[in-house]
Length: 204
Image (cartoon, rainbow, N blue to C red):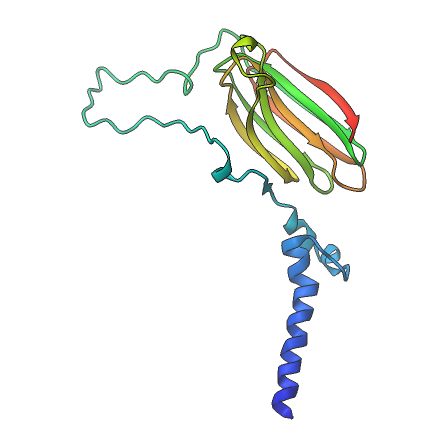
């Protein structure tokens, strides 16, 4: 009887730990409400990558290797896309985007091939579905119909990184508010682009 009581105690303790702590932290499910009070729900708001690399054509480049021989009088010259000299100073912009529940919007930076940007954006409350992608604006007849290239697709609360434009065109973000409340996205972007603008906004 005493052994059975211990087994039941362990069983119910495991259930309690799962409901109170593991479900809010790992899956964002908080039936007791404790997860939100102690901050565990924030742990579940990390990036969730949508793409499965095994099911898509993943384009990769190569970094310069280590040379077997080297002459310091005649160093290698690093060219594009790793190094590109500009005849203008870089731009920087901060954009605040407010989205109602179910609202979607697209922001794109117009960039020339080889131009680079640094970016960082975050959501004030919750997560957002995002598709970071680009479409060409020059030689469009040479590309397949409706062609675009994807940098990242995810459901997340924030993202930061850098990007070198592989072609001249629109490079930027589609955001969809999947929360049941309004959200605010703050985007900071710096680098070489001629303009950044909102291309469309609607409700899904």
